[in-house]
Image (cartoon, rainbow, N blue to C red; front, top):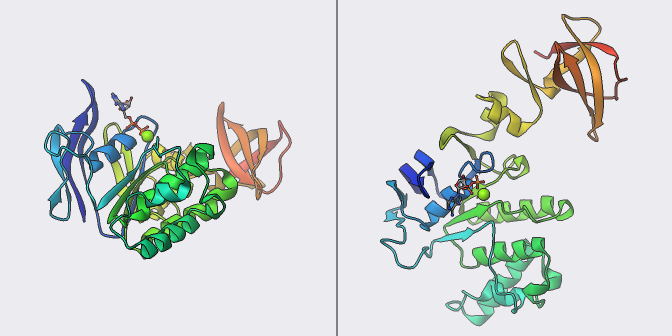
Length: 303
Ligand code: ADP
Ligand code: MG
């Protein structure tokens, strides 16, 4: 399993990560979330051994992950990393990019693996296409398939679906994450999308202020958000009597002590998100119709 012990790191003067400790079991799926600049990509790069730590140690099973000072060739066979900026071989085909590192396999076996992976990332129609001609999202899918080609024990993914359009994203995400579970591959995903987390991640690690703010299953964090940052990750929320109240927990009633004035209604497919003014501040709740601007309404927090 992956063990991160008291890791601290800075690029220059300012600390990026301080005293980070966590573990991930074989086959476990851990999502790393946090605001832009919170250090998600940096943490993945450190796990990969791209930089030397200022403090702390990282282990995969009994193998210590060492930075460039102690390990001349960055990276290990059991670990693959798909960066936010993926680099492929532009003038060779999708197939060749994926199969590049498969020389130790027999040709027939290698071809079968490449075909399987091309299916996982839904690029059947582009197998022979030169990577140069692909869109950003298609290149990202090639990079994913290439990382999986040699069956790593642990896979580090940085915003893996960020370049992929919404039409493809849902099915692709299911296929990739299912593939990882079926092959018992540990997966650490840096993301700002709750879609990458819900239904897939066993645990969600929240980075804030250089350190780990929370490390729990997504369901626990959704049901008991320990901070505004965590609540905001899941959706619109309000602070009422010092409590975090999600928009779906606030209901319109005939009469209550909470009186507000409707400001705007936003169509959200299965409901409208209503913005109303309560004591001079915006509150948000879900409602099955739009509401008239300036209408007076009464709200109640669902028990
Ligand atoms: P995230 O992926 O969560 O958006 P990053 O890990 O990319 O965050 O960045 C964390 C912090 O480190 C930011 O303040 C960023 O500006 C800084 N940083 C990232 N890469 C470098 C680098 N190569 N050199 C110096 N500072 C960097
Ligand atoms: Mg990043």
